[in-house]
Figure 1 (cartoon, one colour):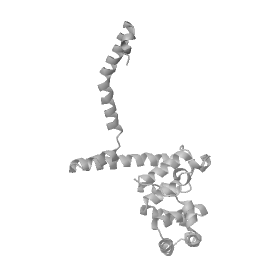
Figure 2 (figure 1 turned 30 degrees about the vertical axis):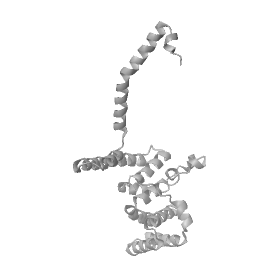
Figure 3 (figure 1 turned 180 degrees about the vertical axis):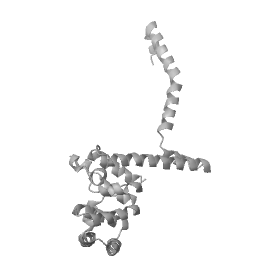
Length: 227
């Protein structure tokens, strides 16, 4: 094997040596910076998982409290984006969907009031068909679960929009997993409702529920993944 350093000119050898010395001097700094970045970028969830096998009570308590505080901060910002007048539909969709990922019960009323939210008009390929674009509010409401139920009952008693009613019923069916349970909920709400107009809407919702097929519900609701 040739020793290429012997065929280099003296000036070139000195320059090469200087470059290697410079890199050797910087190498520890680069390693430290990379390590620090990993520590900064490491998610709280990753920290919790890594700590569980050997952590003491205090460390786990601190991490769980830190995680809860972080989730609340995220949910607050996402809720602001969802309700902001200057947020476009895509921003609202992504915010709505991720509120479901966070199981943010505080977002239920806002999600319920925007249950028809979607940005399907921006989808130009099959790759773009995702729950966070097509049905983010319903997906989030399903992911949040039981806290969504009262808001869905309010939706069907307060709205004359057929799509709002169908989406709300689909969310209820997905949460309860049984149309008969949803029917009992609606009948109970109907019995307690003094307002004639709302009574009529609840009665219409019961009729709609009977006609709602599993295929329709699958098309209306696409559950959000959960963490």
